[in-house]
Image 1 (tube, rainbow, N blue to C red):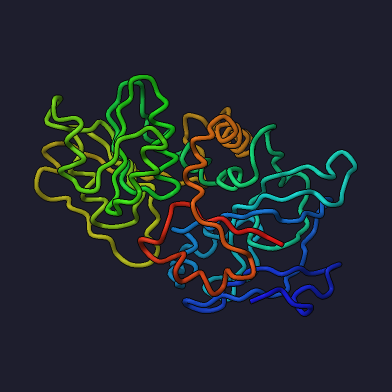
Image 2 (cartoon, rainbow, N blue to C red):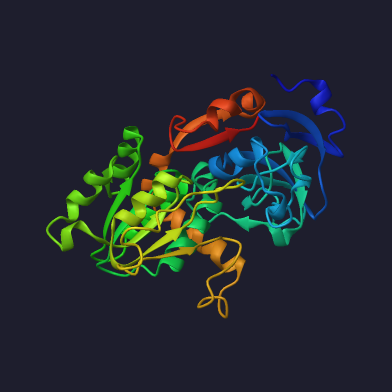
Length: 341
């Protein structure tokens, strides 16, 4: 659909926004601009495939409705809800020294909006807006690597080559001497792995191959981001004795079987969670969310290889019709960007 005069009306107080309205349905509706010193015009936002698939399907558990709220979400789960948190925009109006600046914000998909200056993270010099749209994903990947405790020389398997998995693999691969393999059942994800400088496997046996000369192919750490029971089993299978799975997927509503029989206990394996809402305890005394976001943006600015993940672009006005295919398991590409008129 095209943005018509109805969607563009009353632009002093509203702007077109994506609203999830029912399981498998979304619409572009006029939404309030919000409040704050800065008026922003969206340039590009990113679709967070894992989380937004759960929102789109109405699979946010009732117990998590409060914790799952995005910073500037409108409405309540399950529906209708304006949701999203990967926005890159230009400041159109506000304090003179902010006008024209490009910023990242944790805001839903909306053409124009207002925010307080405290909610804006200016883009570092040289960071393209499209790559900057991955800032929330990079922030998540950074937190995962901290929670994993990965160090130089470690053998690391990352199961799930979505955006977060790819970024976590890239961060681990930049550690001196680290050996990293990115695992996914979708063979086409190999191209992203190669661009990021990591090995790729599409089966458990293939994942062990690069490490067979040491400990039978066992990994020190496995990072799981595929949000599937099969992926979790794959992660556990790749570990050596005393190894750790960092569970970074959020599975939403429903139960997830875990293979805790067999040698799980005798090999003293462990599963720990990672969630971006909290800083790891060892860093919390010195870090806050602003410092972590600034670091995520700097890491993106320094790493043009990440552009290989920016494989799908969709016009904002086409988003409601395209969402079923974009959020389907095994959807084309890795990262999905939304362009605004």
